Length: 312
Image 1 (tube, rainbow, N blue to C red):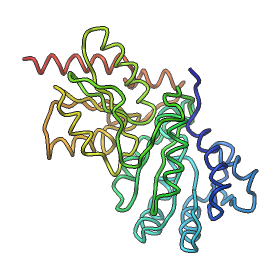
Image 2: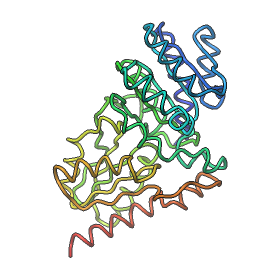
Image 3: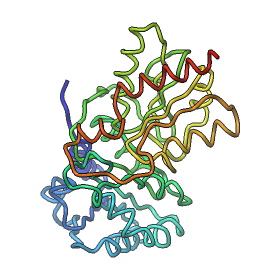
């Protein structure tokens, strides 16, 4: 099974979109080789703008271009896009509901050796809190391409979370992506594993391990964190317990979004797996995922615990 970083698929999708949408423009903060917007820049140099290491200005210019009828994709590292430029995203993009797409790479702890300062683990929470913002966290390269196309067609602000680390390709080209709609990848009635981003692949592996022990798990891919698919979450709640899995803090991300739906409409046993109120560290991506419990073994273990608790 091939491994491709979602940022790579983003670069390819932009180049394809550039052929179809002449009003599409791309902006970057002097990181085009890393964010892969360089692919678009090489093909359409007159529609690419390097704003330098000035992320607030990056977002402000993107907002201005949107008012002129352009469809700007603004890219930089997630920690800078959502942290350094938060005010500009809030007041210049989301408040006037402008058609700006923010595609931020190097999200999560799988940034690796760059360490805590560059590992954005709170970006989904920040973007999800903003009115008018759509938040997408694709699972693999195929879903990333389809998400980028869907974002370009959507009218309004969109945040797309992208990764540096190569991940397994889960889907093929027949896969259908629909903004705001979760996807049930595996049916089951014992425990529902609701995952997002790169953890979808781990959830599918956990499904296979649980199956060996006669535990039937449902696996749900939530690629759009906002708007969240309430219907698929409520269907998952028909299981005896629910687990959420994300490469993000458990505060404000997928786990929180699912908990909000369940607590209001269908309370059920819930365990959130994610980064628990701490910053990341420097290390190899695989080692960090293990250190923070973002593994198949952890998902399987938590599933067993919940089912045992349910049986009491």
